Image (cartoon, rainbow, N blue to C red; front, top):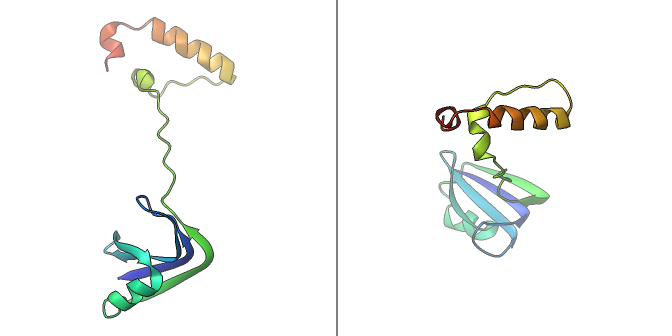
Amino acid sequence: MILLESSLLLPMDSTPIEQGGILIENNVIFDVGFARDLEKLYSKKIKQIVCLNDMVLMPGFVNAHSHLELSCLRGFRYPGTFTGWIQKLVEAKSNMTAVEYEK
């Protein structure tokens, strides 16, 4: 097990934890809480402690932005300007059959 300790931990489902820790086992988050509590609770299993002083530990950002209606044009390339690309994209989409659009 590896314990990551930081000045501030921002869990997904609870309030921020000052002097927080994330316990990792086999590349999976095993437990989250106050670093000192995790150290005591899992002292015999922890193989490494990584102190990330003055840092914030938080989940990674996820870009959930998508344009599912453009999936059928995956790989569409246009070497010109962004505006030109959009115009060509709209043109290509309007010329598609229903079968092509559903791919």
